[in-house]
Length: 477
Picture 1 (cartoon, rainbow, N blue to C red):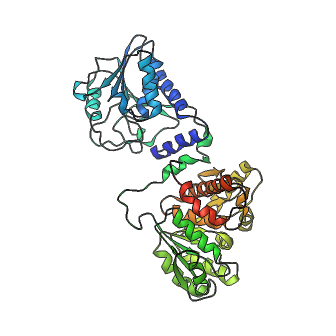
Picture 2: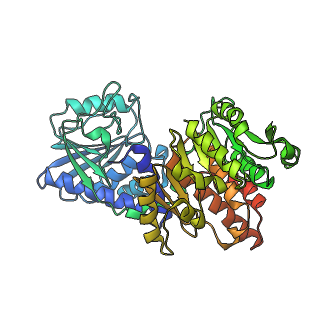
């Protein structure tokens, strides 16, 4: 099964993989027409009741495959109100070919003319909540008609994820849904046909720009609603925690603080006036300061643990002590990764190793990305945490869901790009589950690198990625 949100992501990813939405609409409409023909005889009358979005567009296409039926297309609104270009093109095709296609300007005048079958194509999976006008009145007319009803993707007024409805909803006898069944269809008393419309399997495997649809902001948001991140790092190195923190800000976190040794706090602060420092009294992370770090972490949504900490034995002991007691969400990077396999923790961990670090953790890898995908998935299941294994193809897995990211380029072998990725993943983990956060972070980090190289060639530095992250995360890019 697939949720409405995931279906929107997959649709957009299919388009990014070269399968145009117009082609998918053609396949969807054909699938609807096949089911209509199965439930009617030649010359039967079919009323297709269509909304102004792509759900209606599917029915516009279906009408062209029903020439042996008496098909009437009812558009709820005027042609100018059709909301997508491809749906409008398919409406225009009906008009040019002089099909019986009618604009319904007032639902009070809507009539079905006693058809043998009704197609409900008013609203699709992306619409939730109570039906508004004219759809509410038309749904009642459809339910009152003495004819079987075939719904396109989901009955209008029914939540595709839950099967619930707020008020009137179309009572469908049959649903033609696309690519995969929707959870909300199972509770309904109707037949369901799942139609393969040509979406590649890799639209659910490869991370593409459709995954950016997972991001969004409520217009009434307040400071902190989009996450507070604590970066724990620094000591031997100062640039790494500064890069991770700046990346977290650029990836959308509202507040980012850096917990670091007092001895390097001034240097880290010097990288940006946007950084908030929470120094601790030591030259590096040691067990004596873990209680302070734990108290700070408890006040944040996500902790990014590892950038610039180094691999001193006392530091690794402190990492283990922190993770043992921590029960929040943490992105673990760099030297801190080697502690993860041996520590018992209730924390939700997103680990970001490159392939060498993965081997140190006990995992296996391969130069073939397909083999590496399987190896990472198996190791993630054994580890019990989410992995983002960096490479020419990044592999993300929690042992159940596995994604592969293909953005990025050889210019990103420069130091610091992994710190940017960890910071971005930390920000995104405030608003997404770990696999989604890791996948989107990998995609955005790689896209940022691609944009820089396209503009100026190789020779990028990690700070270039930080500046490019907002554009790489834009849903309309």
